[in-house]
Length: 290
Image (cartoon, rainbow, N blue to C red; front, side, top):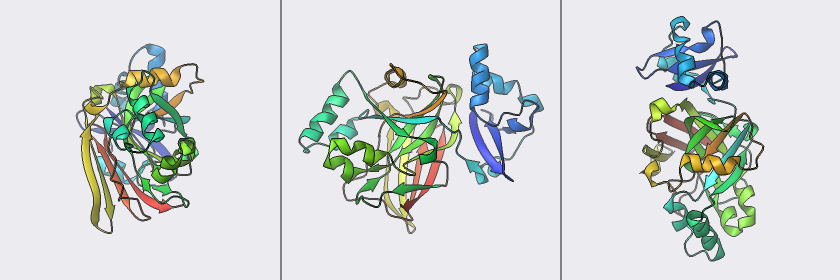
């Protein structure tokens, strides 16, 4: 199933799209969940799945048109924290070739036993569908990074969404110690448009991904790949994220950059970034200068 959140008349509702493509308003039932984490919590108590909990509510849930849902989308959930994983695709370390010590560090992260896992964002730095992502005023080379994103409840995988790990590449390239400044700033992350569960996604390392950057009606950049190119499993990344860590109830864990625009492409204010992941959906955001 796919889970959306919408906002109408200052009220937030949790919507589920079944695998039969019928959409229901779960918030309109007696139980009234408004967040994906509520059925996730119920599932954890019963050793069932989020979809099992939702199916038990469908008989009393009114239907809603998917077109209406798409018109009123907001961020699919409010993660307590957002984390990222790096150099999980060959393209990530290959793009740093010829950069001296920086390149060596990326090769080691790609080939080593321990993956790169880092803190990315708070809820206040994370936007949802059709909201603007930001580019720093002190950066001259800014790119979106499309990533399959794991949704965790209490440290366990409960679904997947689309993520955009915005990055100031020139700041990152200047010095590895500047990585946090290149990655963590206002509006530096986007997630959405929904959360898809295992039942819908199937094998998360076998889905197609596409990204497109539009500017003034023209396509500045587009490319596609597959998560089958990822050299780490989702379970492996979650394991390292959780090790000796204070794991919050809800987390978004971005799994690494799969598509990197060439060096002569940088985002500008007014651009539109579209990221599509098979079996999940399309995350669309405009770009603004901070």
